[in-house]
Amino acid sequence: MLKLKNVPTYLEGKSFAKVVNDPSKPFRSYVEAVVSRGEMLGRMVKNEKWRYIEWDNGQKGSELYDQVNDPVEYNNLANRAEYAKVIQEMKKLMVQ
Image 1 (cartoon, one colour):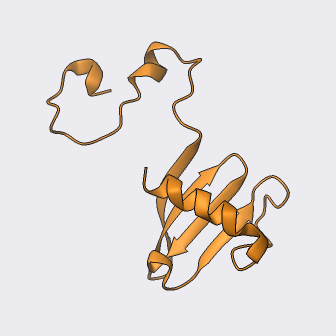
Image 2: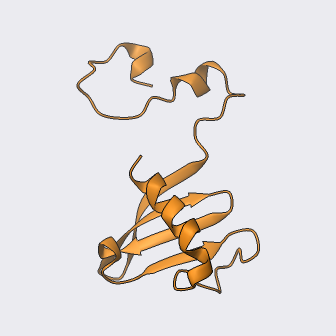
């Protein structure tokens, strides 16, 4: 929104002007957030299929859920070797 109002370029953020100008164009396919559980803080990234959380930068564990087949998040898949590639891809989204 700031880009549309010619705000100074030194302000940080990601423009979503293209969505405002053309709502049919996707902004991005994932969302990031900071989440908490008690006193622990975690970073979360979620796309259409997966939700991945790292607690205290992974020092206190991580969680991976299949949002399509397990929408209520009963099965944490983070410690299963066959999901290592999914976790790697989700971590890449966290740094974009």
